Length: 127
Image (tube, rainbow, N blue to C red):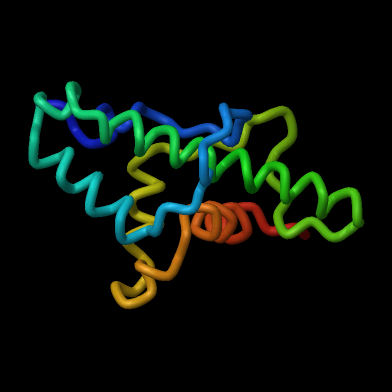
């Protein structure tokens, strides 16, 4: 049986992605609920539209943070300092662990854009 890691699509990259209607605006609570529902489906999850939704949402949140970081760098105040050349990678296991670290009451009010930014700020602090 495939793990949620394989189902969501392996590693999520901090890379450019196609625009979504509201990119990165899905709540952490909704993202986790959809991920858990996919896991419960096992191999049948491969045929679920939610698989594409989650992958797109994660990629859109990463792209939004990359744009934010570019603006911060231009202003001389980056919030994180990931390695250059697109080498900042996050597996879906890392993403899910990070999302689960939010207290349950905060998950509904935290967007994926915010969660992605929090991850990179925590993982790649500027020194």
